[in-house]
Image (tube, rainbow, N blue to C red; front, side, top):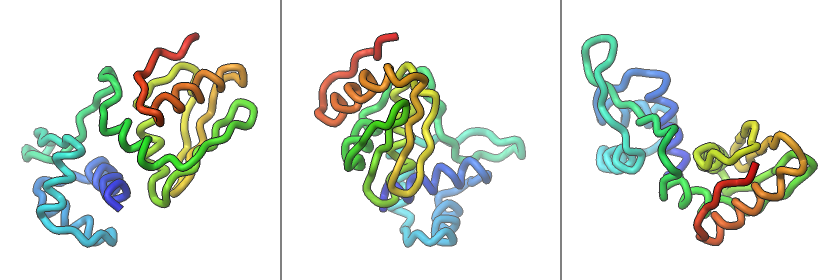
Length: 158
């Protein structure tokens, strides 16, 4: 539930200018999440949201763009805790997750920035990873195995 709620928060702040925790809590309740201000506060901290100056002259919540940053422990934990299984089919990898966690696992895979991943598509409890070539699937699966077994990540070879 937490991952689903946190994904909803990210979606809300991407689509709207949210200035306060109270407004965010209200929008979450409208989306069907039963939250308290304390829960929203913890989620803001977990997601490392910041308040930035918006175009209307007020502050709003925003996610920090960490494209150049290494994968955070949070994404590693999300991947490790939500992935149930995965299987390959030619240049595709289908990942099964816990219900409501497909998007979270997809975000974790996207932050791995593995070579040869063309893109990911996430559903409620599944995620599809598209690899550029069938021969590059094995090193990506090896990286997933390392992640699930809490081993250090190496760069996937070109």
